[in-house]
Amino acid sequence: TLKLEGKSIVITGAASGIGRASALLFAQEGAKLLLVDRADEVEATASAVRASGGTADARVADVSSEAEVEAFVAAAVSRHGALDGIFANAGISGGVRALDELTAEDWLRVLNVNLIGAFLAVKHAARVMVPAGRGAIVCTASVAGIRSGAGGLPYSASKAGVISLVQTTANQLAGSGVRINAVCPGLIETGMTQAIFDRARERGNEHKIGQLNPLRRSGQAHEIASAAMFLLSDSASYVNGQALAVDGGLTSS
Ligand code: NAD
Image (cartoon, rainbow, N blue to C red; front, side):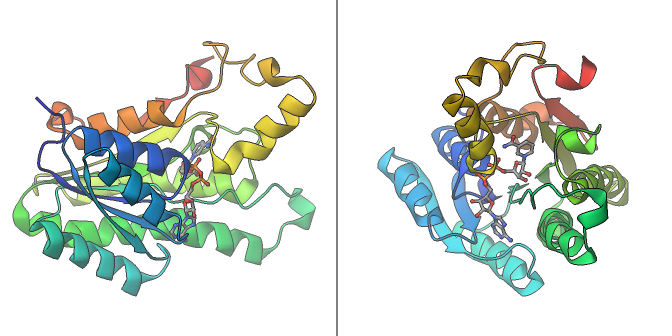
């Protein structure tokens, strides 16, 4: 049987990378999708899903706008009659600046998308799911939210915030039948990290990227999609409030 058969699911950040790979995988497993991104390319993801026989609509929206989040959640409900899952995955890296150069504006830009954006998705999905007595929420955090790494300071703090959002909300939703978890990717080749991979390839250093990872490689977007699919599916019916690292073992090395 298909793992997400008939489930109405929203994916944010679906124009690229992990969100796009998730759209293709979830649709293959029977989900009916509403794909959201601030980039117009989200239409191309929806077309690719439909071309492979899946069900998907696209919507351009900014996850840091509460009115837009409320509207796309309502659109998923009116299109598919329910909201069974949401993958709050949109995020930005915000670049890496030294402590002394960082400004409050740098922080706000990253927090607005990565943390407030996740919060708004959680809030509006829960408004629909709690009365229904069921639903699953997955947020994309990062290994950068578990331990310090090469990313920017606001980015890492925003992802630690997403983990806290998930743990705290799991308790706030106690008794509702709604589950919430985070997936914490390691280094994955996507639009966000393309420059790192391009630079390494230029220097003939590509093999060095995964060298410190126990699996001796970086990850692929579909490997994160697969973990998100598990957390959204009924196979994860007793998994709640967790931050699942999908990182080749990096955080335990
Ligand atoms: P990506 O840049 O390929 O995709 C992110 C998508 O989010 C883009 O399509 C972008 O347009 C969209 N987006 C950004 N801001 C938005 C907004 N305000 N509203 C709506 N959409 C918005 O990168 P990705 O690697 O696929 O990132 C997906 C998630 O995975 C992010 O939360 C990222 O922080 C997280 N992550 C990525 C890695 C990695 O190595 N690539 C590692 C850990 C965590």
